[in-house]
Length: 192
Image 1 (cartoon, one colour):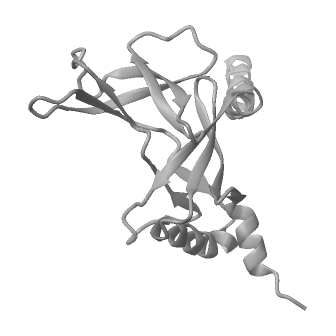
Image 2 (tube, rainbow, N blue to C red; image 1 turned 120 degrees about the horizontal axis):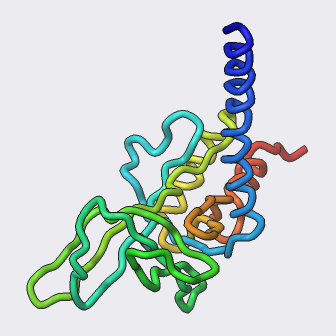
């Protein structure tokens, strides 16, 4: 009995290391091999943009227009492929119930289906990369820079996302093609 408990204990210890290691490995594969997309952000309710050590982001490329509903329902699993608009920002290109034969697609969930009289159907889906994590000491300044960019129509804010086969990783938030991390570093340096 002791031998069985020892084997079970060793197995449990190994599993505790393997599960997080596999999760980290999967994300690293997406970061190194996934296709790069820029997702334009849109403002979020300013009363709670930060919760702890991350910035909450909202994106406008979370819906696709279809001529008919395709019987999509809220909560249904979906696979979305993306293209780019003329400015280089991500736009949903297709949505399907089965995994597409494409180099990059996102496995997601349908939020809801919109349809108003005499208009096409709009399938809204979840983008799972709505948080950008930062070092806690930089959070307040990053929040201020992000919200200033959202209020100023001359500034462009977007998330840099790598998408692989079903997974996505948010790698940076950019304001006018400059990393929000770099902007915070510049704010923290004092001229001598």
